[in-house]
Image (cartoon, rainbow, N blue to C red):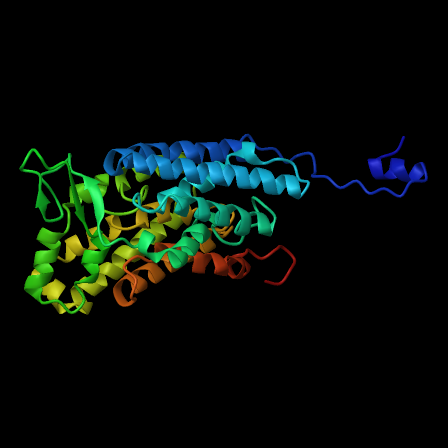
Length: 361
C-alpha cells in the first residue's frame, strides 16, 4: 500500500505533486467569524454617528459598504477566483472607509474612497491577506488628496443634545438643535505660538468639554469621534484575542507621552496656563486616534507578527502622529502615520523574529 498520495501517483506512472497543510493545524476561529465580529464591534459607534451627525452619516456608510461589496464581487469574478464577499472583509472595509469621512462630504466621496480601497489597495495585491497597506486608509488618503474641501471642512455641524455647550455655542435657547464649529484638532493647532492667556482660552472655552470629546459630540468624521463606544467594541475583540492589545497601548501611550513633553517643556504658554493635562487628554480623545489605534493599526494583515514588533509598530505610529500634529501643517495625522508604519512591517518582522534553533540570527 502506498504511504502517501504522491507515492500512489508515482506508482501509477503519473507525475503529480500534492501540496497541502499538515493535518495537525486546527483553529476554532475562522476568517469570516473574526471579520464579522469586527463589523459588529463597530455598530455602537455607527449608531452614535447617526445620532450626532444625522441620517447623512448612514447614507455615507451604506454607499461605502455597497461599493466595497460590489467592487470585490466583480473583481474576484474577473480574476476567476472564489467569491470572498461572504467573509465580511468588504463590509469591514466599507465601514472603516465611511468612518474616516465627514458627514457633509459630497455623496460620491465615499463611493470613490471605497472603490480605491477595495480595487487598488486590496485586490491589486491579491485580495485579503496580501495587501501591504490598510485598504480603508488608502481610500481615505486618496479622497483627502483628491477632494480636500470635502475632507477638511471649515466647520462640522453636530447635534447639541447631550451637554450645555458644544464649542462656543450654548443651547440655552430651546431653538438651538445643532451647532457648527471647527474640529478640536484644528483648535489645538492654533496653540502653536499662542500666549498663556490664549492657550488657556482655547483649552477651557473654545474646545468642547472632555465629556463631549469622550462620547463623540464633537466635530469630526463619521465614526472616529466617540472614543468610549470605539473602546467598548475594541475591548470585546481584545477579549476574544482577535485584536492584539500591544499596538493600541503602545500607540496611545506614545501620543500621551509626546503631548505631555510638549505641554511641559516644548510650549511655555501651555505650561504657564497649568492645563497640560487637558492638552494631553484632548490629543488622546480628539481626531481619529481612537479609531486608528483600536481598529486600523491593529489590522492583522498590515501589522507585525512578533510581540516586540507590535510594540515597535505601535510606538512608531504614535511618534509620527504627535510629530505631525505638533509640527506639521496638518492638524490630523493618524491616517498617514499608520500607512507609513505599514510600509515598515516587513523590516520590523525581519528584525524582531526569533532565532530558529540551529541557525544564526
